[in-house]
Length: 154
Image 1 (cartoon, rainbow, N blue to C red):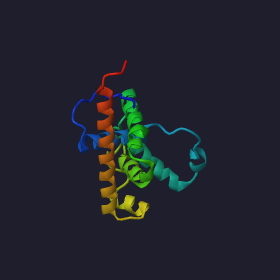
Image 2 (tube, rainbow, N blue to C red):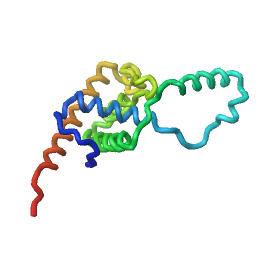
Image 3 (cartoon, helix red, strand yellow):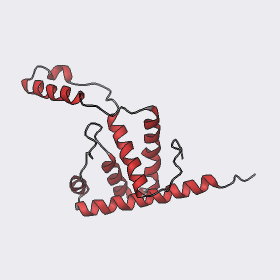
Image 4 (cartoon, rainbow, N blue to C red):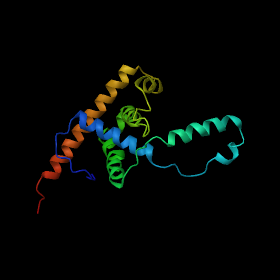
């Protein structure tokens, strides 16, 4: 497991949720690349109003990820998600969806109710799955920390 952060404090739910949120925010702040229909859509009157809103949003201070932020994101996605077994793929998906945060508003892009609807369950169940996933990540991080502190066999 890669270890870009030098955090030596307790590995608890608050720490894991903070790192998941930060990784999701970093991911969402990365620039989009590839082809865009921007030029073809400029002639539509409706799009002109939207463009003004987008320009106004760009003037709001935005989170700009540093190389360290990206390295920490790379540690969380996918390394931490692999602590959730493949047999628990729905829990892994809930963790991934809930971690996505807007770099502009700093709010979750996937509220609990939307996650529940997407997963075909209630929002309460989605929260429970998320808590279970966080617990699995905590367990995996604790095991990885213990293993890294063991003396190497000669």
